[in-house]
Image 1: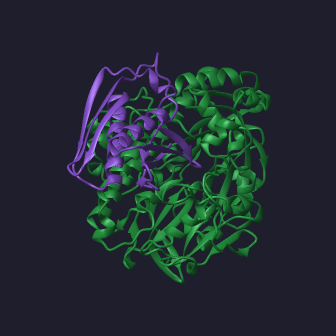
Image 2 (image 1 turned 60 degrees about the vertical axis):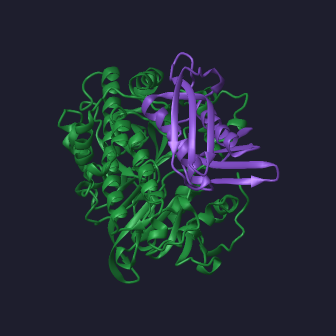
Image 3 (image 1 turned 90 degrees about the vertical axis):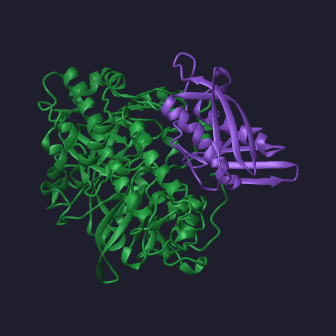
Length: 136
Length: 487
């Protein structure tokens, strides 16, 4: 489950999930709800891979989201489906999407960057919670 | 607001300044000072921003106080409206978070010799022309394309690079902060990815709070200074608010990655990772400064190209050339930047790194960095408000050198979060409401208009009252929007 939350000038991304792998996938989906009016129309026609070396959970989340944002910035790729494995060996993720198509995709926010401000990945009673503020 | 109210001490210093004493939190090296009056302070207390002022007070080498302007609101790391000066000789740091992602986000005001009576019947046509000509919106590319080598050269030269291609006049440089070219820029420190992001975006507005507005001079508050600035009642002007686009965001992002381990390496204890910093003289610090200055020069050039496109639209619509229409640049000023400047701290003259994140340089009369044309009156300061009420032209005042490292406010400051503004706008047509107030608005996204609706912002008049009373800058002219384009 994921949602956008309030931040005075920018936007917050929040997700909860029973495990870390799902949490990271949910946060990626949340990022594209901030970018797109309707992220469900993104077709999974292109696949990209993201591999990250071991690091703290929060930095892995930051780098995972940043890698996806880079694909959008430089390749105009939008994503709608994600698969992630997070563990002691780092992160191995895949994202499926398609190039931006002005006829079908309505962009809503220019996410300038993922920020470290109040970045969190923490266990809850029955799973995990993540929060990130993105700069608009 | 998204988070709880500030629970710490806010001691009133005078009618427009409040202090967070350094005893508030361990690690604070100096006090925090927030320029605000009692009315604005009520809203500021309900935000996390004062805590961010206290966080900045912990940075090594900070001088004087951690400052915030009356348009302060919650940012990431530094608050928006934050000012921090550090002394390299005292282990002072440079912080990319103290500049922000949009390096050299700033504003320029372009004059015309047209008056409201000349333009009134053509506002819709004018705004349509601007909207179709000036690229705006998320990640939008423009008509100016530069390859890798050209983009790097542009970052070294600033607007001179496009003036050499006939896209402006020499006087534009004289009326741009730092003459549009910050010395010490090192384009080679800008990553290939950043250059790629910037190669097609120079001359584009972007989205969020960026805009291009057609305004009229609504009131003159200081006739002598207005005359020196060439402003008259009912004169039509163009205000442009944008920054360094994807290139600047990437320079900041690259620096934050490079600074990730710097706090541990240099023994700096940070209350927020987004305050990531490194000593000015460290390898990380030097690289960031070179890249940040290069991105700043790109920002000046971006606004130069935006102005050029606006000039062409005016010339097409009103006939003649833009020179015939008197479309001279009044001034271009940055409000997200860090600069090495000379200031007097505790009676000693020092070279300090002044970080301005959502704050504007406001040098007074006589300062050597004020353009010759304005040196007798002071530096023009351009303060954008919201698209329904007003913006301001101020002039730098001596109090800025005494109290705020030559700095004043940068805008109205948000009063509502983006999500709250969208909820507030549900069922309303913001463009129609603006039209009812005499403002023609065109935007690429209706959501963007909702997020940026006038009541999402504080009243800029209240903000300007404070900096005027505090002596940081003085009111010269109030500007009223008649048309706006947004991403």
